[in-house]
Image (tube, rainbow, N blue to C red; front, side, top):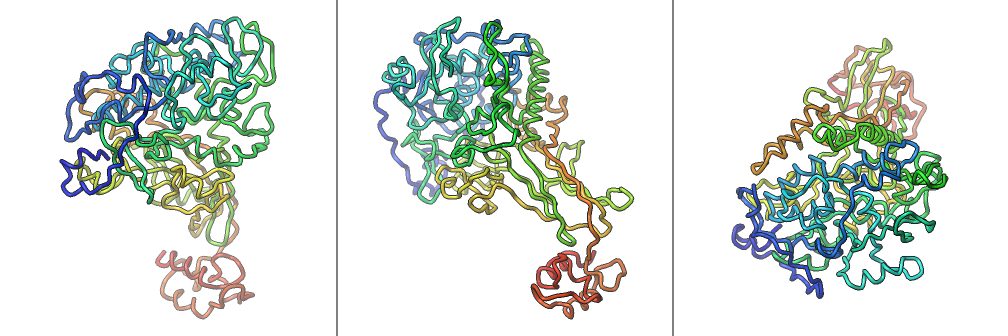
Length: 628
């Protein structure tokens, strides 16, 4: 990953091409003051730490300057009018329990940041910039281990921060005139990602409405635009540069990325880009009330995650039918409970419960199932109902999997696939379909940093995607996905496909199957890694203890379905309850080929897929059952 270190450490790797960084022109605070790499309090030098600097993680947009930006106010200031404890106003309280309100207290983030800081000096700058923007803007992001973050900073991506954001693309006549002036005096990001936000230096708040307000107010269409969400929900590693063959190599150290374009960097999260090539983005989707609240057709991120409701924005405001619910629900049903455990004096328990319930509801609406029988096999089709991959977001630790239970005529479960062990908090993954993204390192990086080739949770070093079989959304197209770094790895999805099929062989006595899809935020293996690999602070242990105390990131049932199973054949020609050599000897005499029927009664056991013939497809199923 880190080319200049490779020249010294990894013998023979100097042949890797180093793409020179371009000149970034006028960015007055490009080289921000900071201590030497490895000198932050509590940082212990490990087996290998890449000697990156703040410049390696530079992004355009607003830069830290406590003297140039008016103070970012605490959300309690806004809550006085915008909801507070009034549950009928879906602004302050829903936000307070959301991950946007909790992100600066998220122990999973701090545990991940600790490992990343061990591996690459100053990489925590990226974490703090996104998760704790108040601290970052007010110059408390250095040291990049987060040691200067204070209680007020933990207010997260709050009202006063978000509503001071400026659209990086000025549109005369639509954007406030003030935005144009701000953009003229700032180094703009090449692409809108990695929290490269632009903040109004003054306390001038923005939103979509043009009605009078009790405070300074500018109308901006940016707040109805998915590009607002793109700011943080596309994330990339800027120390890696994409090559023509879609591999990634390290850039020169102490320099910003050569192009500054996120699609030339290693992809860490592509939720916005996944949405960008979907029917939701291009035409809008009539979700039939599944998403959108009062909206019939949904398109933007806000349409689904901040649905239109009937209510008021403030205690003295009018009631509207297009009032956005600020719960911003996603898949976070576990982390809010962990935050509540660790910060009981800083969070509202009612807001936490509201958030967990809202996110659970969102997960339950994110997928649908179609379960069908074809002879001795059941096909489980998982349909992605969302506008992005399923699951989406952070790569590390997240799983979605299929669970199938088989019952006999007496209602007894006779077999299970994808069973969940509540003691180890781990699902069985070798007998079912698991949807996930797996990052890792190649041989050159492994030699350079002293790790094994293959998957790893040392994300700062990762330059390979070893698996990504997450289900794409409606409107999916392979080539645009590849161009944006939304690589499909280890599976094939056809253009337009937004579902995935998995076949399960029916045990002999099956009369009913129960199918379920589960989602889990963090695997046991990932949580244990964050604990065991941390040698600088207790962030991993704190997370582990909270994980153990809150159900170990319990799985969430997304969708389920049952199917009554029709009688089926298994290839047991002699009816002795075993698929053995006698049956094997009977099979060839019954093979007629595809679409050649009817099947004689004596050959019926050979029509395993129940399609009216005995062919190679049936023989394949027979082979799977042989010996059972």
